[in-house]
Image 1 (cartoon, rainbow, N blue to C red):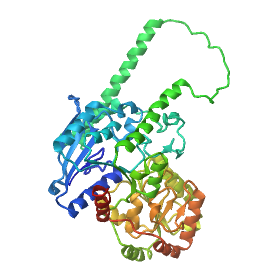
Image 2: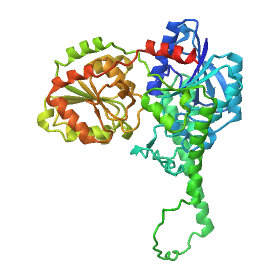
Image 3: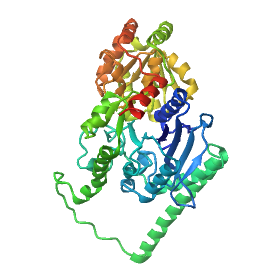
Image 4: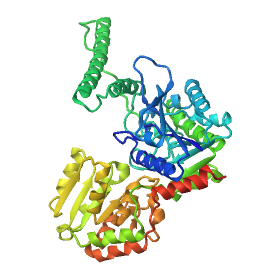
Length: 511
């Protein structure tokens, strides 16, 4: 069997760009080879490498850390679609189709095939028309794993304006300003081309590499500023240097009507409508199977029109795995120590970090004075100030700004109770899976896909309701013995090996 995996960043990326999906791919590819060493694995990435001089779209072979397993890796250079998704958010027209990219991928599939499976783990870095290559390779199974909602939402989370779950995008007009900024993809490609060159000479994250990159970027900014200065000088000369003051504008007061969308608004929203329609259409027409990573994710994809017959839920497996008995033993050891609350993840609105802090703020000092808090996250000054306001309530607060995967066992073994307060419809939550495997009870919001493993709602609160979260925290911190009940209501998530086996049997070798 020959399998081609795709993600926008290479699976062994040193910086772990791609987050949980990158870690998941490392685990899954390794376990597939352990199950059957004769499985041939190829890996392709795109949207992350650009050439300063040669602008031709092409595919090049790369080195990787799984050479010893026989894994071959490649990357697309100069993809028309910059990854990750937010980089292309305001340039969606380029992500619909591109014949040059499609031909490069077609030739790659033909020259390195025949592939039994083309497994796409993200659309980022690709155009939607690559799905139609299925017509040229009918014997290859085209599989899409739904790690996010990208095919119907270019923001990927279906989380509107960083405030709420998106239930109506108003013909795409609500998408226009959704991410809070307007990235210029062409400029980002220029920066990435320089970054790719620095990486080629192994200068990335080194003082010289940083100096070269920042000098080039600042020089570019000076050039752009100089253009505006020249533009203003030209206008000054054109209008007259000594021209007098203009007449005051006439005062005009009127009511702004918002009932009818403007033509300009409809035009701005059109790419987002087209993206969603094309993503759903091409998925239904060309993708053989869509793997949802939770029941919630499967339901969302079905609601947006993905053919039910193509959908299957297979939960992600991780390298950090414990049986229920093993997790209970870890819990028995840690529960005798000082109670320590934990939050792991980005402090973004979608992850609910502010809601978590708000809930903590309502709890009395008497309850928290003997409790520690660990926040494993890169915090900005605003969030650090918020934590400082809570500092006098807790016994102590620890901030872990960045950690290696090798540190996870030590970090998670120290946590007595973890909180995952996501506001978005989180597709799975690998952090929760890992915490449970290290014997840590986890309180979830009801929009986290990992809730599939909870038999009751005793450790689940309504997403966005900080008072409900505060009530749960008060309940379990006031009487920590109740945390023992967590282990009677949880089913353990699969190991990476179990997941790879399901993938092989239910999808790759299945119908």
